[in-house]
Image 1 (cartoon, one colour):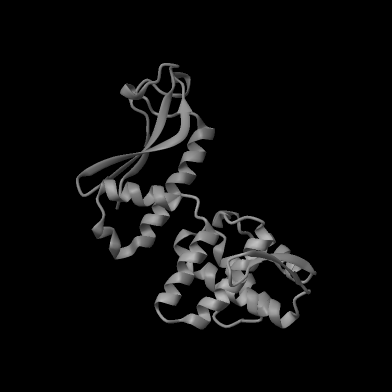
Image 2 (tube, rainbow, N blue to C red):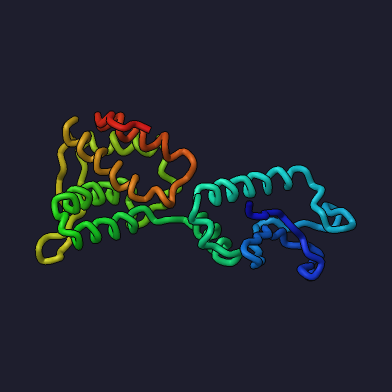
Length: 223
């Protein structure tokens, strides 16, 4: 059991009279504190600096529950952590992950492993995702079930794509609407990339992966 709690400390009082709420983490005799975006005045605290604002407590309890679930998911690996490393793990867990950057890393790893065909397939769908997002960066946390429907609609219409030729020069390619079979393949590979990023997902990922497999026709091992 890892002690976690939301705390306010007297010596953390700001010049404006507010206190930053910290998440206290203790593991293997090491204490650590995670800063939050929440600040409170003395009116929202008891005389011994306990938070009494019920709305804020509700928000903080959701954060604590999320952290406890992440710690529980570590299983036996929790033995490798002390308070500081656990703090780092919990902070990293909530960082915005660039999905397209992750795709590049995963594709390069496949190439390094000699899996050229898989790398090529993933690179193709990665390019279409970049066209769809209209950006070289896209936070994985913003991928939702609605994203999938919009991506399918994007694939099924005629569009202009930016690509690079063998001389690294950008060219415009006119793409015809994708067939159902092609859409199936792209969603299959989207599912593969998304599954590879499972360590950095948000809570509704099982639902997203289910829809990816369902829409692509791959209904084996549905979550």
